[in-house]
Length: 139
Image 1 (cartoon, helix red, strand yellow):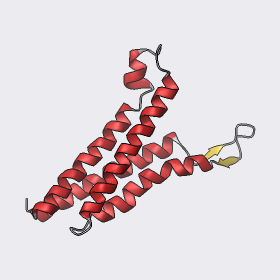
Image 2: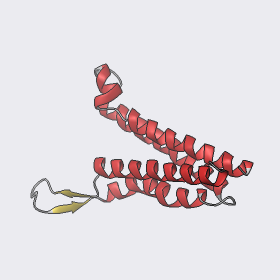
Image 3: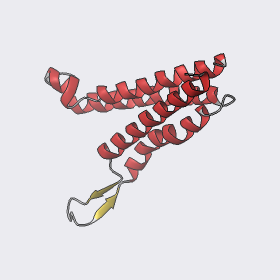
Image 4: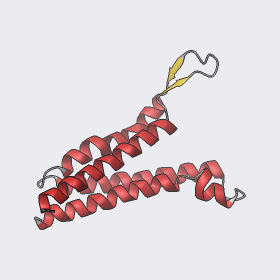
């Protein structure tokens, strides 16, 4: 494959991982959800809108920045900031949900864990890092 084709594949992978992260996030934190008192009525959750902003920023802005050589460095920077911020928030959410001790190991690793989500975020970052290197190297 030529260098330009590699960049297109990496950009596509970056977009798909960011989009998948957004879809997972919207499933876990739905903006519209049935009201507890009346399930027929949908309630708008403002706090979940702010939770969806980082993944949406990753899908739209980071992907757009990585699409061009001149702005790829800003995409790399923003992508890194989003991943670090997301890692801290998801780790905090997992620790708060499971408690500091007493939860079974499988809850920490699989069932109630945010580790797979954090792994997806870091994989997104590493694909962005390779794309940034490809733009920087001109290949």
